[in-house]
Image 1 (cartoon, rainbow, N blue to C red):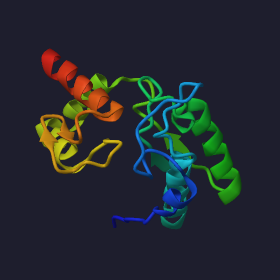
Image 2 (cartoon, rainbow, N blue to C red):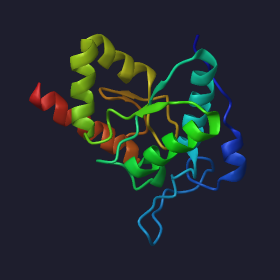
Image 3 (cartoon, helix red, strand yellow):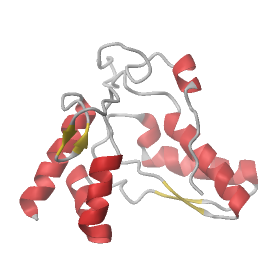
Image 4 (cartoon, helix red, strand yellow):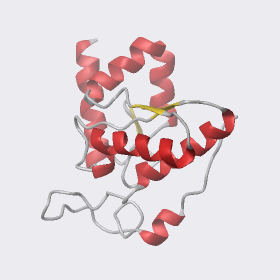
Length: 166
């Protein structure tokens, strides 16, 4: 069964461009204010709790260090540390899989096409989005988004690069 969880509490503890209506900026360390501290760690914790209940051991995350936005919780080291913490904390043997960790967005689109063909690519285009502003009104060749934020530009550029090599 699919699960949808309300994680709006992240907005209550996080003052970011993802949780507030503020302009996207970068701090002195190069970290964009779209970073929601601990978001991916929370996602993995909920996924592990569900996996534990179902007797599953493999958890797949879409984190990517290759063209990430500087988010600490997208780094391979963070995911490896989280795997250890989840295994100790739940007395389990989870394996956190991150098949996108070392590939760019163009390679991600290519992988989707290889695994599921046009049908999977269409699901990604029509049913997912990475827009920092949460824009769902506009639909481009590469999916929903504002078309202007860093996440939309990265996704659009990766899609265009993939299409040009098809």
